[in-house]
Image 1 (spheres, rainbow, N blue to C red):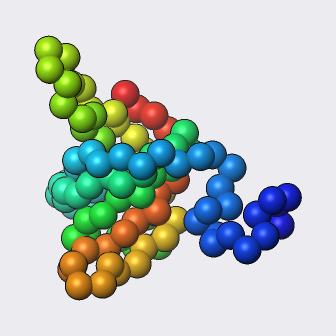
Image 2 (cartoon, rainbow, N blue to C red):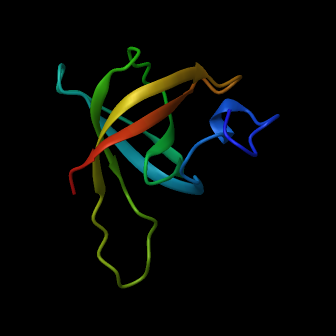
Length: 108
């Protein structure tokens, strides 16, 4: 166990600090060519958490496009990431799933 992590939940024992955000995302799946949509709820240099209706396979890899928050007079370009699913669980009463995603590569 890392020093200073006693009593912390596993998702709070990360090496990189996660920043709470509220950004729209698009999940692009390579096998089916389908896209699914959701919301990024936190982000770090090594991973992100997404809420979506899509249920992935364990360790599935796909692309995620994170749209930055709107800023007046600033052109918005999505951040494109190649990610791997680390965890997935249902959120009570919402019909959504929370995905813990590890960033494999920053594409753009």
